[in-house]
Length: 196
Image (cartoon, rainbow, N blue to C red; front, side, top):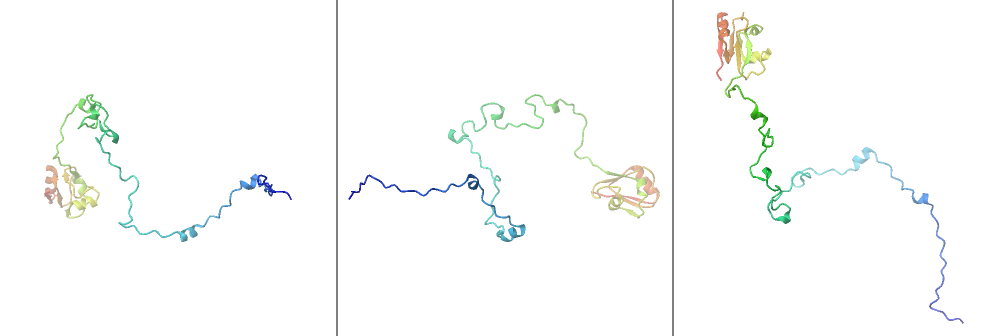
């Protein structure tokens, strides 16, 4: 009887592995058919109503504050992100419109002539001959606007004396030229000044 040697290992015959072809191995899995739009809408879970409890600010709407002069480890220490020396490092600097780097700017070289008052009055002008188209006995700013003679009934209106007026009318305006008021009264009408 032969003794069993523990060092000798039994040879186990392995079953031959089946070789899978490369074409079959690389074949991608079949994608499921895309659902119709109606099916997607039905399966979609309804969103909860927006309230103060679930409000979120959009990304980028709140910028983090830049803390200055908090030591070199902060990255904003020493010169506090202003660089060294020069105009841009000083307090109170500003580059106004037309600034040309310290050179005398163009608007200072240009001559300045004339005067425009801050209290000037701008009138909408209507001539006497234009009033003949209106057949009403009293001509108001609203009537002038309806007939397309002025743009704004609330703005100032001035009647000028170009042409002549045929109808006997009462004209209401903010100002009248001398000739216009004389023509209106000679035609039997009245020039009424609207006080602002």
